[in-house]
Image 1 (cartoon, rainbow, N blue to C red):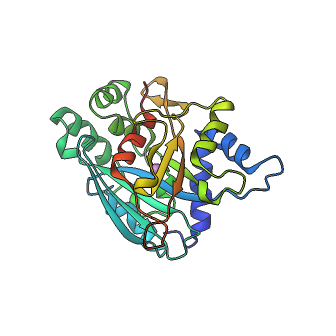
Image 2: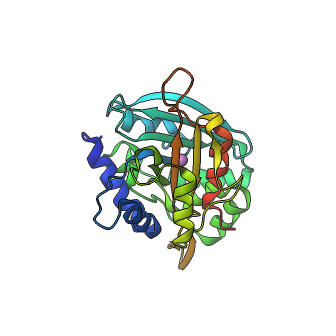
Image 3: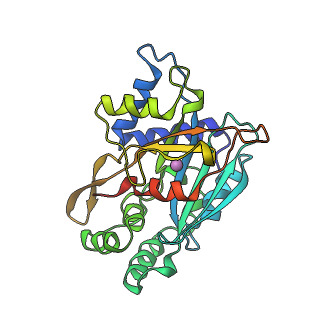
Length: 268
Ligand code: NI
């Protein structure tokens, strides 16, 4: 287990930007010419399979050990996902959003592929310090990738990339130069970045105390058998949180919005 939260997130960021160059560019764009503006992360998201060696609880253990606490529970029926979010008592630390695919709800063919991949993992891999940014632990064929993609974009993404941050999220609330998510979106579009428009460019809003947008994932090359295949990698998200009637800023997630954010790694 990592002993330092900031070191863990630094490793996660390095692994993430290596296959998400647009996140690096946007980070610099928002930070300004002199890098004067500090970029605060609202949350970092992870994907996993709900099998014994890899389930949500196993990933969460890394964060619980760092003082994080479990908060909200979420269910994404159509995408067959269960998720949980975690917060740290020090609210300058990013929230963590972990989802897991309910493998047993997929077709027998897809289940067999996923069980085969996870079976080839070292039994204690998940406990190692670097697990959260360790990438793929199995060999994957293009044929199996395509079979999974046909049924679950999430399953295919996870089979191809393995374990690493799926996205980082800029907190718009902490940007001194920009007052709203709409302003940030306008900047990104004028700089040529492509936003996810599934469910609208801005998901949620003041009425649900959280507004979110995201880029469409970059593309990067992965090895599948003897082939090099270019597929969606990771995306960058932007979140603006609003104050609730009780005077506190909302810290949870909105399932209907998150459902659309997942689609940022769709190939089409
Ligand atoms: Ni997110």
